[in-house]
Length: 117
Image (spheres, rainbow, N blue to C red):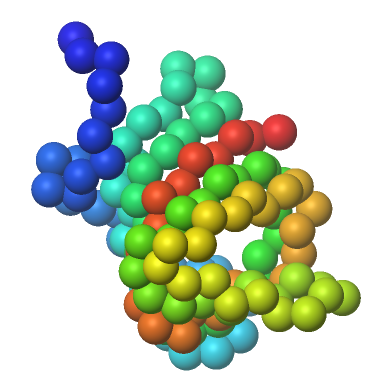
């Protein structure tokens, strides 16, 4: 077994398709694809690639997430704060307690590492 993990969608198999819950939908009809590359045995950390088509939905983070945008443009509307536009090349973390709207302006793909708290 190799201890090197590739985040290449071509080697990760078929993605899981999802969509925001209807009660969280703000605009559009976004569809998500997730290629989960790793889940630790205790289920508290996972990592992979996520992609979403345009639209907007409410988010309420109870987990910690590291994101690195690979393609596209999104706007993060944190409640009570100025909107932040993220695009290819941007890297950031969303901390537990982040609440607001994730708006995908152009189909967005990111690497993610999520730690459940």
